[in-house]
Image (cartoon, rainbow, N blue to C red):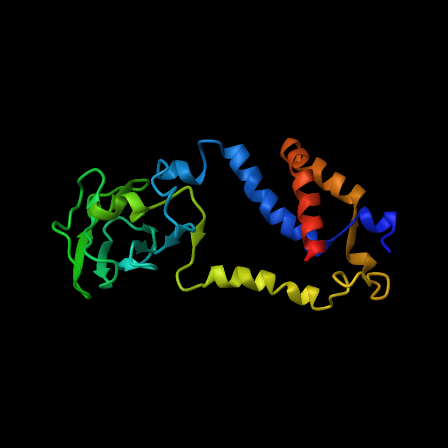
Length: 232
């Protein structure tokens, strides 16, 4: 039987899940038309594999796959390079014929090609710090086959190539090892002495106040996520 105390208590696991979703929502509310999307003028809004800008600064040459993921993506979608770096686009042979065409006409690979191993390269010799070059595959632009090259610096979340940060994030789910003590899931918080890991409604309220106005908007999200976590 669930007591009133149980109803007003949220495990840290539930709070962190809610916090992740809430933080994303808060970022969207605070940024509006600014933030990450603004860096590329919304160019990558419909690009499924865009998860931040991959930081390749310090490298003379960088390779981007043409026909990545489902054959209709550039991989990575967004990269950060130094002025003078050469970017090599290499065809995977997947997804049909592709090309690489800059939105402003700075570079153009020409006719579409479907051959695996085909390459096109461009050296950003005249680019300056802060420049951004949006590009697309002409026949597949409508389905989100678009990319961006940022030079020098970028106002975006940076991803370390090869860092498998996406999987590492799952390691956060692997934080289910904290669930591993499934004391919180089992409702045995009192048994495991894990009450010390629980946060009360008052704690959540204090946290919301700490976030200010955005925090007040996130309280319902925290509670809803907690309810969903309990139902799991």
